[in-house]
View: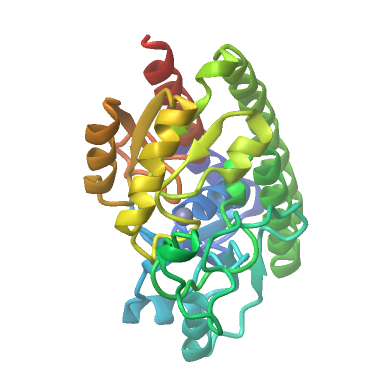
Length: 323
Ligand SMILES: [Zn+2]
């Protein structure tokens, strides 16, 4: 339906403006680093923008390895959109090698970043990994490439609105003739995000306080926790680069028992094996799949940001309340 609308709008503009009919020539070529930002960009850009996405649906941006086509897409872009907060480890080198002249916009600009959870090993480098003898069981092996802040800011709808405004600003800068269109599109989309936010808050409010601790595979839901009041615990940190160690898993299993976690979920972007193991050891049944860092394909349940959020909340609610 969306597509039909878009085409209809485009066709009427062509008639009004008497422009040469060239349906494929978008005014603005946009490259988005991953699927969630691409969805925001599609909503803001409408028929004027053509959006290419680097990390595909169901892909993991933390460990993504660019393809040659990615550099080519960047080279031709008018605008490049990234999350920032060191989410896309592959990005800065790719931008450099592509030689793109396009502005690179960090769409998380202006959000209030949350500190990455204190991890043992966060002091890294200088200190050799301490052993369990000193009472600190140092979980994650090796060095992390993530930064000081949690990059998964889109898991707050409040932040998503800031992303959308940043994208609209960037598009206006790059294509002044389209500015009114981008403004109108973003207004309409922001209104939908406002409705979604109210719906999510109401859904979480219906979950009893003592049932609000749940488990996922990596720390991707810090902003969700902060805004909506669920507690997420995970065996892996804010990046999926380092695998959880046996000590991480053992600690988590203890924590699950102490805090009486209500539900456990796999994530679409990560291997379910670890979560299945923890489910086995804690006696919790896996409550479904959550979408943290990527949308699903068109036929999946999380093909857009709004669908993703709604699906995650419904999945969580159903697993906890058994409905
Ligand atoms: Zn992540």
